[in-house]
Length: 323
Ligand code: PEP
Ligand code: MG
Image 1: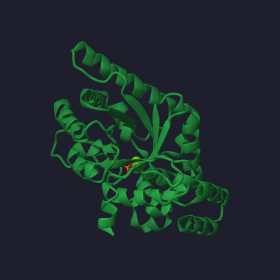
Image 2: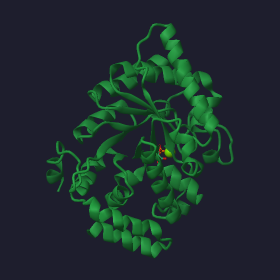
Image 3: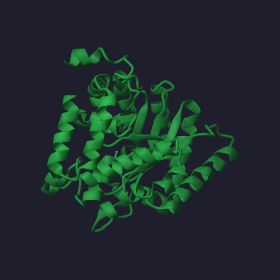
Image 4: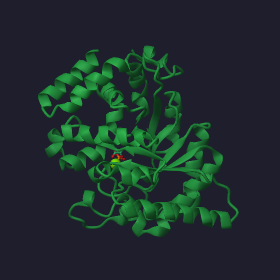
């Protein structure tokens, strides 16, 4: 089966009815670009930059160290877009030196909240990312946004970082696109706030599920409650895709759901055209896309979204797969 899948590497991901789908890779380190390219990815949809910061002794990487790593990824992807997510530290991804005693770290000073509280760390990362944008197509992705002021402050700091580089005569792509992770239910319920400020959206289903269902994503005692097919989760995802497209901006899913072949047709039916996943899953998802017919999937997906009954949802999703 692997062999058959490997033949699809150079095949474009197009549905039976001719709709082109973008397949992107999630990476943790620039070295992962090799498997991303191997899998035939159209680019990197999620570079989890916090992995450059984690598991080190006492020091966070300098701007130059970060720049070298981001550049390495950009060069390795040979002109394909590389979406670099700014530091998403905290909760399940602890930064040793940021360790503190929050009772609910998943609800605490993490990700963009941490970056806005540590402007020098954030600015140095932004400068490093912008410098890498001189070597290929880079997009900036901001995690865990919930408030308009967080978006505005993030954009202002990106402008500040650009100003610093300009003053220093350093090259960068002045038109680098900036997007938001939609992974807090409040964000999915306030999409107009995001689409008017952002160039693209990327749905982080891992956290969106965690926060919607109030279950810790790494707590095995509640793992049985972690359900991507909960109707509330499906509504939030579908709303985000529609609102983004209505506003004319790209929407991706970069959480684990994007790499689950059992959910490929459901996401296609919701209108998703950009999937970002672990490179190992990419060819299986592509195969599913090649065998999918949107004309049949879309009405069936509407049935899924109309239902508030878990049993009926499971049946309707199974029927989608069998089409
Ligand atoms: C997510 O939350 O779905 C996501 C893609 O980001 P992470 O898993 O790194 O939190
Ligand atoms: Mg997340």
